[in-house]
Image (cartoon, rainbow, N blue to C red):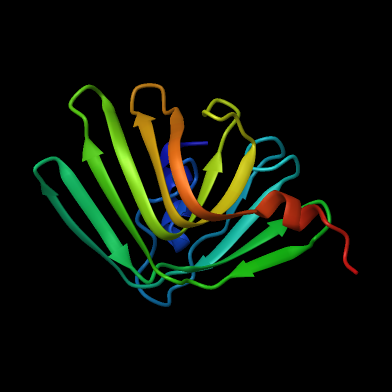
Length: 166
């Protein structure tokens, strides 16, 4: 799966499939579903559906790009069981800094979903909602995401979609 798609998932809330933060459609437009095979975002196949919200991009200025806005409503579905979880957009800010060495440092604030692949650090598959801040680096040559720090609360979306009702 391409990093562009990974970044699309992040921008949705912000969704970051180990950065899903790519350009999604304009406000209130349904985005194409993102389907991730088992072992990529969760142990099971995961589908992400969303409706685009407002996001504004500023930059680049001094090697920084800032995206901010309400983000996107997202529904995550376990493709094995059909169980789903919907997250309403609550706003996010993403600040990308070009480090000048082929890497970027990304700071996400607010509500952001980060999807880590098995090649990332820490190794996925994992899909996590961060409410607060999360800082990670991206090696543009290898596409590897490395989570550096986070504060606030986290929700393991894979675990939530794995629990049996009741």
